[in-house]
Length: 431
Image (cartoon, rainbow, N blue to C red; front, side, top):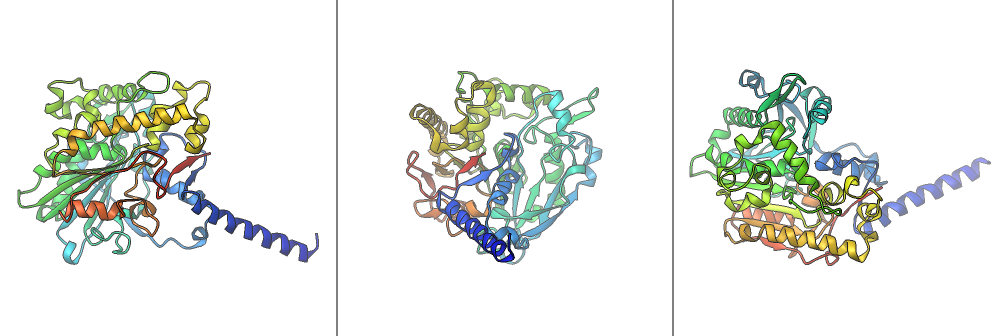
């Protein structure tokens, strides 16, 4: 091939890449996830990898996000507050300033659960079970961003990301000596709160406990405990992002997620730390489901959830174990490929979610943002939290809706119409 031809071909390829990027952005702004396991989707890192898979021009630019270093909790070992492998737990803290100097936002990291000795042993060889494998610094984006144009209400607060390394939403308290496993999520929660109080959180006049996915479940479980840390004069609220995991029937008629939760609760002795208001009349596994918890949380809470939660579609409704013939494969990968009966199944799931939050939504202190998207974790990603083309309900982006609710500017009970009416979604697709 002649040099001129090479240049021409390269130019055409470059043009095609740019055109593809533009087309992808216009096509419902769908994020393409490549070769991703269902467990990986349970946190922001999966969503980040979705963004990195897109052939956009921003890939070649240096990272502009604030990078915040990991701090290990040295005092945790003496309390037995350790990760699955016995290493110290950790967090990332970026100090607040100005009007936010005495305001604190705690973000509980997500990342699925482990429900058996075997997968907990595997988990302790990853960042989800050992601080040895945690990133030494993390980007703070979305609700953790330090830029007013990206995070208008919380940018100058003290913002903390508490790392997740116990596998039971910060709620277990047991151990397995034979497998050298430490199930100490509740102790990690307590040790982290004690550490942060000593770092200045005890002086907080405003505090928000948030979390994504398994961390969103943890923010529900620990919400009232969080409020109890502060005097009545402190404004304390909680945000659960993608934490409304439902005890739903899967496509085979089984209860995939309930079976998973039963293993988590039993193995890690979670029942010790579940709310008495639930344990008094339901079994411990049922009390690990938010639908049986949220109406009894006393502290003001905001539920942010996609009605067709992408993780639950993949891992709870139509996992391979419930779909051995792969009849849901195309639909799970791309909702546009679902047939009419599959769409109806997903609409029934949405209806179950709306029923699950009905009593919760009756309280004036609570807030809701349930959009009809195929998404998961929308507060930590900048493109879904607050950007020019962010998802909106009632012309309000998620960041503004959460702020309106937190500061009592406006009541927020935003529930989307059913799919496919919302064209502002950033839907997740799988390949």
